[in-house]
Image 1 (cartoon, chains in turn brown, green):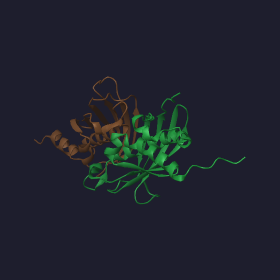
Image 2 (image 1 turned 180 degrees about the vertical axis):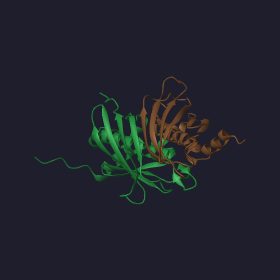
Image 3 (image 1 turned 30 degrees about the horizontal axis):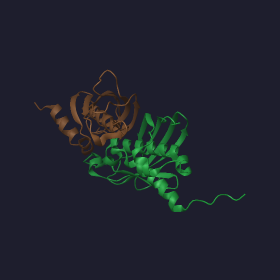
Image 4 (image 1 turned 90 degrees about the vertical axis):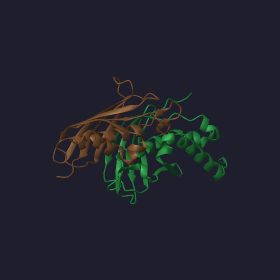
Amino acid sequence: MVDKTAIAKQFIEAIPHARALGMTLTEISAGEAAISMPYADHLVGDPRTGVIAGGAVSALMDTCCGAAVMSHPSNPGGTATIDLRIDYMRAATPGQTVTTKATCYHVTRSVAFVRATTCDEDTGNPVATATGAFTVEGR
Amino acid sequence: MARSRPEPVQVVKQRRDATLRALVEGVPYIRFMGISFDRRGDELTGVMAFDDKLIGNPLLPALHGGATAAFLEVTAVITLSWAYLWEDIESGEIDADHLADNLPRLPKTVDFTVDYLRSGLPRDAYARARINRSGRRYGSVHVEAWQDNRDKLFAQATGHFVMPPREP
């Protein structure tokens, strides 16, 4: 049997922008995905504090939500973001890896609905949450 | 009563450009993304130079939605910050030469909603932000991004921001 996680991992990590930001897929199952992004100097958005940029968190959220959509059993093909809203609750602690967990909780003929949460190493206290709508392709 | 003589144009331009440069070049992530700003008077246009590392779908190819979101957010934050600093730039209150060591605090994003209108082509992208409201504590900003044709937006976004505390 082919290891679906390994294939998904390879697929996500081959996306040039995901690779440039150092993302690694840690979990994937039907409609669920988790992706980590280690702290790096080029991700810093506030040089005074060393906090990573909101944009880097957005990219992580977008990638993870897309992975959750693609892993959903009723989505046969690829996907693209229709809209994504991100709420930033607090600054991610400098030096810590951030991890997003996304759930694709509903799929219609044309749209997939997703929510996601991003935490740093303090996993009980989210850094940001997101909700999004993605396209369903290939049917 | 005669008004005071306007400052020489190069002095004014130098101060504006030095402030903008300090604001943008001080942020490692903006440099990493290859984002720069064109300035015409007080109007800013964000420019994200195409690079292979911005690709999200290698088959099409298309820009990564996250790169697009980041570009819109950077443009919103810099435009909001720029507007907030403008009076101090014009009055000469800002010491542009030493700004790099004493960067002003940037506004903090509260929420950001991105609307993807068409796929981002593997080309340079441009963005302009409109500040719909900028108060003492909060700001609300709308941003539009396009590529070859100004009338064909490929993404737009709205965000809310907490303004940095005014230093006494």
